[in-house]
Image (cartoon, rainbow, N blue to C red; front, side, top):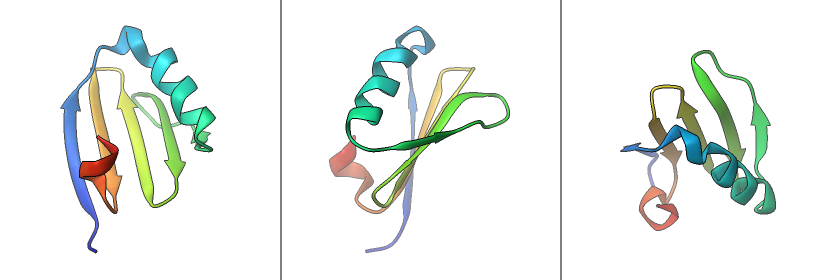
Length: 65
């Protein structure tokens, strides 16, 4: 399956809840310019930007979302 990208609007005030869920699922975090965080997991990269843009990239993006 090819890599895909999906962009969503996300409330930045819910960043901690998203980060907690990603942590529970084994995602590894790193800093990213203009972002609250970027997390890498099994075949996916999740980036939450300060603007509220949530970018999900990788395999099987639709089932993650």
